[in-house]
Image (cartoon, rainbow, N blue to C red; front, side, top):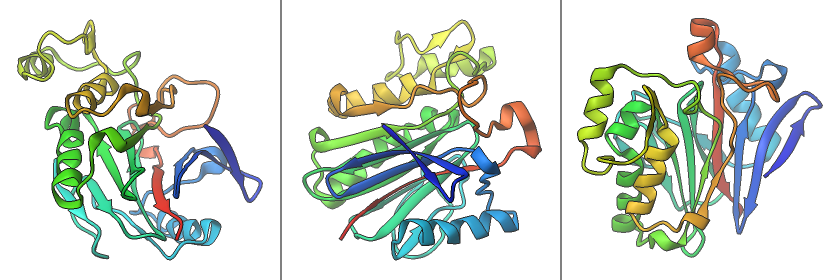
Length: 238
């Protein structure tokens, strides 16, 4: 992982692999991608200018397990897939988990938004299934990048929801909890491994949006409605 500074004030975590370029924005310089605000719309436009690709696509996120192939429209859902080069696909977060995937053999990319609902409904597993069924992706060729989020150290849930997670076969008897604190990251890891993605293909930015002191990140749990949104995106060079 590298850090990229844009216009001397905005910071991104950055990976390059094959034709894919992977970016996770931070809140440095108050870089806010909340598309319900004018600044969010403007910063989406800035992304195209800063990184010089043709288009940037995103969803109206609803904490679902709805997955779309990129078609130029803005759908309601929480995962996007495409094999089109020079098109960025991304998701917004302020505590939930951003997951970016690259098929190194077939040049297919995916962007997933997963909070606890996404983890419960296994949107990551379902996205891989769609990549395999509709694009021919082999899970063993997938590189997965998990960005900053509200980690196990700070993500407490209620007893009822904890029991519901524990009853799911994929998580049954798995160490996804520390007391009442849920590790969404571990949930995602179990989904990936269950779909035969090699552990060595999974890269994690081990930074908690809620408690980290090393960089500026937005956290809805910490700041409520005042919180901005970060944008995590992936695209392929031509």
